[in-house]
Length: 74
Image (cartoon, rainbow, N blue to C red; front, side, top):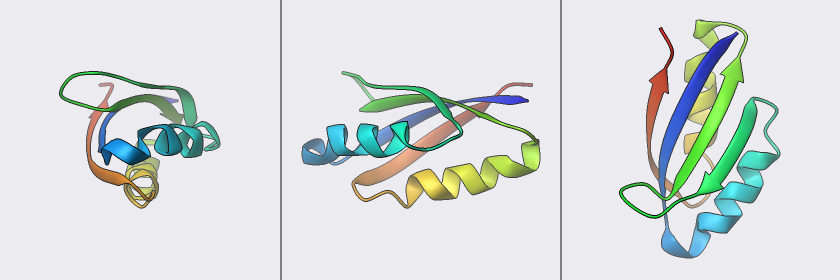
């Protein structure tokens, strides 16, 4: 399994909608809104490194998501 931390900037009016949509994604293990440089933090898990790009694209496609920064465990 590959552990991932995604830092997400979202439209201010959409933060909680983004969180709700992320909670429904099977790869997302934990998600919560935050104050600071990023609006949402999501801890995710995929089977293989090759699946990271697919996950990032799916998260980026969520309405209200402006930008993501993804950190993958070594």
